[in-house]
Length: 82
Length: 271
Image 1: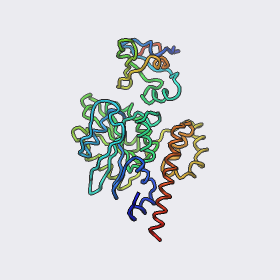
Image 2: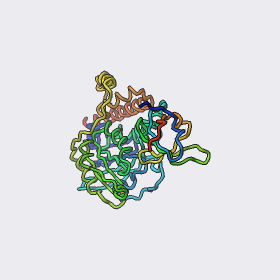
Image 3: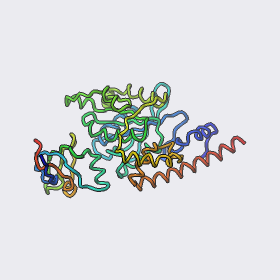
Image 4: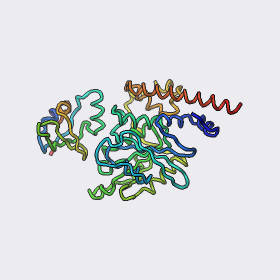
């Protein structure tokens, strides 16, 4: 079965999916990997700021907020993991 | 800097110790330096306070310990200087906190490094433990907040974890003083008795390992290779981590300067 990667920001409140790949470069990539976001990691969208940015995600039992511009460079499986 | 003759000979034998002064750390005679590292908000400062009896400000917000804090404690008639490092997720990125922690672990020559992990999110915390284990073999892993883990009905197989990582694992709930005796005893065994450990090393791809091996002979010629794990240095070079390479040069120059100054002084003393 093929998976279709879509940007993380398409995830709606309460939905979860697996990371497919990171299109992030340099130090930000390092940081995101260090936070435990690697291909295969399950991310759950658990909250949005009033303006819709940043967005809070549950990553390995920890809540991490990401700016949409950064979240857009993380690609998840379009098929939800629920 | 005025040194007593005894100090001077010791310092000559162990120039690494002299480097600690770069971090504002002064040990008195036979004092062992223990670093405390860990992710933000895992209770490092609580462990620090519980061991030293100090009341360093603890609080549930990130970046609380920005510069390092120090305190003493004694165990079995030996004196230990505990250095509380800022919380970091990694030693490879470049925030101020991360650089302080990384530089101290690399160049501060601690006699043991306690890596504090949050028992409720071990998976995420182990990243830092593995990174520290890549630089130093003097690592003790303290799995803190086991009281929280119990509340969340998590059970951790500490024996298996110890086997897997190859370093001592000490479960604690620093808040209630649980496991602190065992932690002090493990620190004693590592720092005073110099017990060897075999920390698990992350294997790299064949290509990277080949590049490391090509660099190693050159790196091993450097004085620095005795202070910092050569393989780790090779990896940073391959990473073209410019800021870290600059830091290395700075510390290497400082170290050379202190060694020369000490040799002069020691020379005068023996004349």
